Amino acid sequence: MVISVPRLVIAAPSSGSGKTTVATGLMAAFASRGLAVSPHKVGPDYIDPGYHALATGRVGRNLDAYLCGTELIAPLFAHGARGCDLAVVEGVMGLYDGAAGEGELASTAQVAKLLRAPVVLVVDASSQSRSVAALVHGFASWDPEVRVSGVILNKVGSSRHEEMLREALDESGVPVLGCLRRAAQVDTPARHLGLVPVAERRSDAVDAVGAMAEQVRRGCDLDALYALARGAGELSGAAWDAAAAVVSSPPPPLPVPSLGAAAPRPPHRPERPRPQTPDGLRVVAVAGGAAFTFSYAEHAELLTAAGAEVVTFDPLRDEQLPDGTHGLVIGGGFPEVYAPELSANEPLRKAVAELAFGGAPVAAECAGLLYLSGELDGQPMCGVLDVSARMSERLTLGYRDAVAVSDSALAVAGTRMRGHEFHRTVVEPGAGAAPAWGVRAPERRVEGFVQQGVHASYLHTHWASQPGVARRFVERCRTS
Image (cartoon, rainbow, N blue to C red):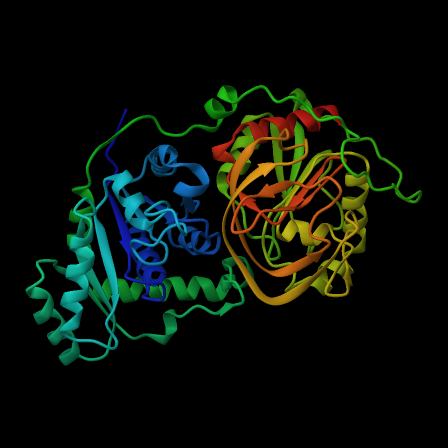
């Protein structure tokens, strides 16, 4: 199979240069021309893909060479871009920044090379003039395999400033494909973990994306950018497919239901029968809404391919789990922002606890871990785990190389997976009697909790790297 989707990688010398504004604006501007635009984000970030989805009407997808492995970058890209006229890939951090201590691994540069895609460098020009040529020359010449094929100048102050920048870049050999003036209306609000997700400000986010598109239309040469995208090299190989991935994954040996430190089931939480859905499907409820916005699209696709009916619910609004729920997935998000509202929804907290204490499989990552705790910043949560969670001034951020310590509904002990931590909260204690993961770096430690069917941890993982996780989880749904 030959992959020939026109594509661009939008990169920058550093974070804060305007990649998200330019990438999202390009996606929306090209989509408004009637093109089917496939949006992608390098790295583990969940928030930017929400804005990409708003700009294109398609699911925003991540391309993370650390979490998934370099061999999956092209197949995952082809899966997301299938049937599209153009793909726009937003980079992460600076062009050559990747996983700490791992060379180019997981950098925008590496992903651009794996995709054989031209790179457009977004430069914050607000405090420079002729020096911009030296900066662009350095980035364009650092790695000859990275095709830095154009520059978009951002935060340009005036017509005279633009003229000086263009004159300087004439000597660099890298063409200027856009020039954007400072514009407050395209700014998006941020807080302790970055931009505020689309789900929390949808109306304002729609306006912001519209402003980004208009700014890009006025300031960028869209025809030249599309012509550049069409010059991307062909890729060979098959697109990633969830059904094929699940079928080819190893058979999932099931854990003993009582394995781990089983919490006592309170007498006022009797087990309810969980009816089987038609055709042998099992309902897997996936938390969504404003408090739980972090999820990779491939997770739901893998669960579906493994035989689950995936149903989304909102813990801020829904007082019961979806009918027939046999398993529960609670991903990342911002429960700390919504702790009072989550706590006030007592019927759902009790329903979650009842499901978990009944032995059903529950996969909780980061925000899900906080929601299953006894309390979060003094607000009662579900009480599934005997831990207390609170906000902290310390940011925990970085990739993790992990190994499963305990058999669980997700993996057998000894399974290796790579993950990512990103939070400003702490739970005490940090690990249970049966920990979820052993982490190798930056320090050796165990973390997380395996308790009956519950697997709860701070680590965000990408199941495409281990599709057997989804298969094992659905098998546990059938036997619990």
